[in-house]
Amino acid sequence: MPLVEHGLMVELVDIADDETWFEAYSLRIPVLRRVDTGAELGWPFSADEVVAFLR
Image (tube, rainbow, N blue to C red):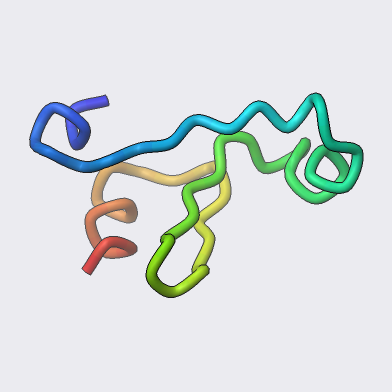
C-alpha cells in the first residue's frame, strides 16, 4: 500500500458482518470510498487510477 506510506488515511471495513454491504461490494473488493464525497472506486484499478480518484 504505497499510498498509505505517503500519508493516505485508510479505514479497513470487513463486509462479512453486514449482508447489505456484502451484496453491494463482494464482487468489487477492494473498494475505495472517499469520506468527503462518497465516491467509490471498485476493483480492478491501477495506482494511477487511485491517484486520479483522490484528486
